[in-house]
Length: 292
Image (cartoon, rainbow, N blue to C red; front, side, top):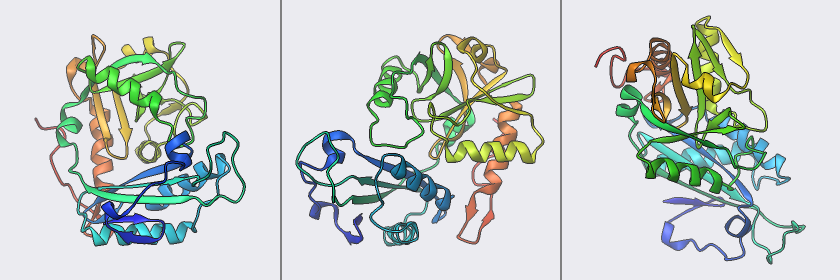
């Protein structure tokens, strides 16, 4: 069961017009919401970012945020998603192909769900990353459908046997191909400021809130690839990756190839925020982070 505009229907009953601007131009926005124990995590934050992204490209959402949220919650219920993802995209709509945005065009909403387990192994053991030039456009703060730059970076990493690509502009780290990047040096957490060069991730904000709660020093400023390679700990964050340690960058081993103590502290705190059975409480679902 998927959501097409405001109707629930089967996937094979939906046809996308060839002249949909999302298909032809990547003209649209999207969000991915994580579901834990049947509960959509930080739905309001995702909806607020969806609205902002749409506004930044001059697109009016087809329905109110409240209406969209209720439709997505119903979609999760209809598909009985326990642990998984909700994907929603809104394209500008259908119009004869023209670079100029036409007037009086109706946006098209599509959403689906998928049961996806948490990436427990990666959260515990970490991932390896390559460093590569950030060749994306300069409005990375908009969660748009234009993802080819990120796709190419991810493909390059995978072909080289790495799990992710960390991007940089003139040797200043921005973010990963689909995640935010954090480094820790001498007890201080550093991450790129939330400007037009990165997406202000929902989990990124969660980590900053946890750090504040734990009185951990945080610096939001750009840092170099050299600084990154000399970090005591590195981790990446996203809705689907949560807080994942980075244990190797190119040929440099980070923290002896293990998750570091501050990363583990943040993981444990994040774990306590995960909802349980729709009642808003938390539960430790998978492991004692300090144990192998």
